[in-house]
Amino acid sequence: MADADAPVIVVSQFTLYADVRKGRRPSWNGAAPGPVAEPLVDAVVQALRARGLTVGTGVFGAMMDVELVNDGPMTILVEA
Picture (tube, rainbow, N blue to C red):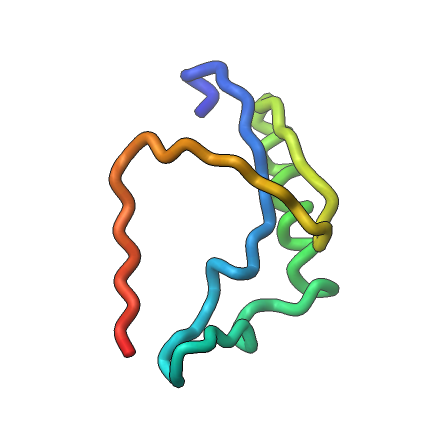
């Protein structure tokens, strides 16, 4: 990242830890609760900044509207 001289954005996204092994509704029980997760996200941000990177963040736990253009392949395998 530093070689590219590009900024980084850190977004906490607990929904990436969804467990779909039991039915159609995902469970996020395995994701760390906010009081545990927020300091971890902050530590990642600080470590990146300590390396001289420009880091953008949002508000932890806030509702976000995200627009994305996918520029590359991505496969998510969900086994029931």
